[in-house]
Length: 433
Ligand code: LLP
Image 1 (tube, protein in one colour):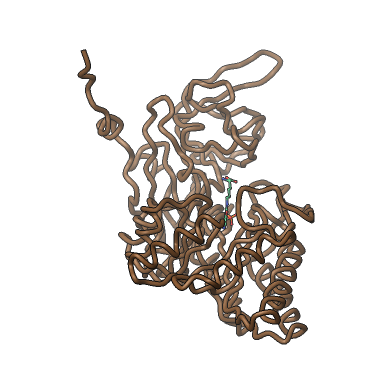
Image 2 (image 1 turned 90 degrees about the vertical axis):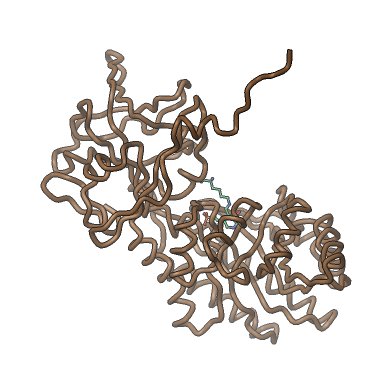
């Protein structure tokens, strides 16, 4: 069980609220977020920087799950916010996120998006390519304004779970290569532009990472580069952004570290490098997404039809699927679940949980150990808070689910369930003859 989850009278509760009551009240499929756990995760990062006396910004990578209420919760917990589109920027601004705490990412930001960032006076743009350097400077001149930027670089360190690889050259659509002179050219270009204030460097080495070595390696490489630029030009780096990617526990096989550990290790490396290079320790920024919201989210589904393939497997089908969680189909992602209204019973049945979408690959779990499933039971799938709702679609014209926040025995709808009316609101009748 995660966060405030508990079992009471054979039922799964979250934040002191019965999940079957939530299912009855709001319908299914339903995303339930344990906001106390989101707060705890946020504080884990924020407090560690404070305790170790390092200036920092912890920016929520809102692609993991974005809505007005989520941005407001992020602000309550003193997080900054990383946005990657005009849509996320718009939502964050509407939610009241202070503009100076917003960082804008993306490898192909449009003119409109960059103009929007200028007009809102956001904190910084993380610049991805040479075209964008020109674009930002042109818009800065048109608006007689200035923009803080970080340069996103690919350090040749790629981490995935327990493994990381280092390469001389990174084959990535993102950022400037740190190892082949590209980053140096970008530095020169950015320094020459009157509309750009260069704060420092950014990198993001991967996602669902369980070790600190990759971050340490990347931090070392970026610090060395900042030191070299200082030597060559007198440049004073203010910010080192080491991205997100801290892993979470989806299943028993996953062994993440505590937020505190990731942060403590990267701070140590940055401090050591700073001392070696005789540089002031820059502000350290990070961008966790999954590790802030992933295990705080639980998906509730109603179980409907069942099918036995004799000698092969038992299927149970739920009222959602790849339209609200595409991760199993897309990445072969693994989850654990419980039948929420039988949570205390033995999980000695094996089922493959199918979604309701018209695609054979629409399976949420394969050979999952569960309590005996009957039609009308509520399936609670754990750890769906990151990249679930945010990657949801209307495939098959299935409406996207509702989202509720629970805390301290209270619950609140934060995203309404889509209606059939919503599904056709942008459709127009055919009028050509
Ligand atoms: N910063 C940058 C620049 C990123 O590209 C990402 C994620 C993050 C921060 C946040 O990473 P996190 O802390 O959430 O690992 N859809 C995939 C994950 C894609 C991650 C993309 N970038 C999934 O469902 O696993």
